[in-house]
Amino acid sequence: MTRRLALGKMLTAGAVAVLLQGLAPAWAQDLKLAMSSPPSSIDPHFHNLVPNTNISAHLFEALLDLDPNSRIQPGLAESWKQVNDTTWEFKIRRGAKFSDGSLVTAEDVIYSLNRPATVKNSPAPFTTYTRSFASLTAVDAGTVRLVTREPVPLLAYDLSSVFIVSKKAADGLSTEDFNSGKGMIGSGPYRFVRYLRDDRIELARNEHYNGDDKSHWATVTIRFIPNAATRLAALLAGDVQAIENIPTPDLARLRGDPNFQVLTKTSARIMFLFADWRDKSPFVTDKTGNPLAKNPLQDVRVRRALSMAINRDALRDRVMEGLAEPSEALVPMGMSGHNANLKTVRFDPEGAKKLLAEAGYPNGFGLTVHGPNNRFVNDEKVTQAIAQMFTRVGVESKVQSLPMAVYAPRGGKFEFSVSFIGWGGVEASSGLRGLVACENAAKGLGVVNWSKYCNPKLDALLGKALSTMDDTARDKLLQEAATLVSEDVALIPLYFQVSAWGVKKGISYAGRRDERTFAQLFKPQ
Image (cartoon, rainbow, N blue to C red; front, side):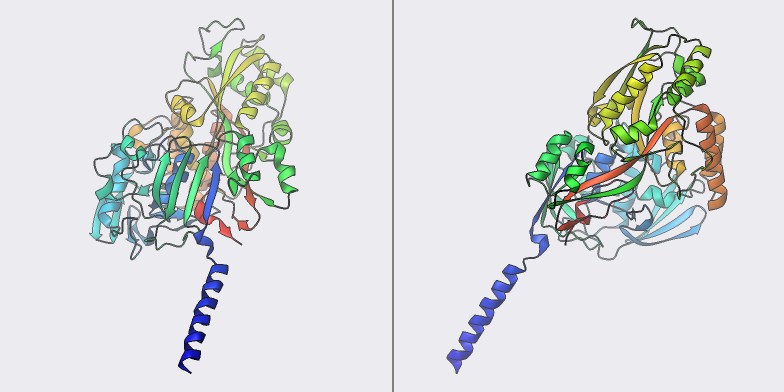
């Protein structure tokens, strides 16, 4: 009897072992992703650039977070309340720990929200989100009180963009220290393992993470593959299980392959052109290549002519293979500040030529259009197509395309005349204050205003909107500001980008309106 019982126990243990082996948890697998653009830095407070923040979100948390449709949800703060128009309190999630096992405290939060102001040489600083802060105090170890200088309606959204680091690990470190792997201690779903610049970052599941987006993967490797064809080849060969920014010519092929699926979502990212407003511009010349005494881009008729020269439907249908929605608005319908009265600029090459002649350029001029070549869907092809359209109306245009890690810092130094770029936000004020507000470092305005556009009337509207807590009133002010931007042709809007992910069958991913690619949101089916 004893022997039979022992045998039974052995069989039971063996059966359990087989069962567990057959049902190996999905998180025991390694997820490999390919992203289209490497970060310029892994310091979470150095450069407000999507490839950077995309990586940071795997390792660090912000106080608040955005869901796939860009609605506010809890992040590191499990709850928050507005005490009055300028005072907020945030409760840190109970039991939240950094990847080294230490508890996240109010001191870490305060240190992190103050750190962006100390980061040197940022091409696009995170201070645009923190300039409004008047004081930060710890009510207790798990509660932070934040007081702003004036009402800030979008404070919750601003706080979703500033990551919380461990003060103990990060204090005194430079951006280069972070890039070498130091200080990479966060409370996010993954912990840092290794970073090979421009090649990959390796992560492991953070066993101390107690948030909602727990990882289904024990390890994650994020490869940076700027070349679209190479990125797709990596997916098809099984080197990675998911990619972002599918090459548009291969959409049909991938959709027809039973081993893969294509997931799409219209983003809130408006793709547009900056046009330099300075008296002299570095890449504007006469037809023989000589510098012009005066910058023609200062004339609203010239900027409007360039906008009319662009066939946005052709960009959507021929270049983007449908992954674009032409628009003159800065944010899509449903977001605050969307102005339905702003209609997409009609393609009118003859009208463009007429405006150029009225502005004193009947024979056009020379221009170099700059753009990235590894950040957005078909970014280099779009830049080439736009240059060809400009040339057809007499503005003979060349193209220079650069990796985003090089392109963005140069744009921040105002080195371009006309430049192609994209911006995504949660309401119109995001783009307005970042892209077209007069530069004002003290207020965090115009931090990526590559065109040097400045209109005090716009700033007055924007300033009022940014301190108006009533949503309806703020929406009206933002619509007025968007109308002024359109009238001035302060930007040349093109289209909202439609994001597309290629994913191996058996893995699901909910596309995000902000275009982010997060390993923690990939799930085995």
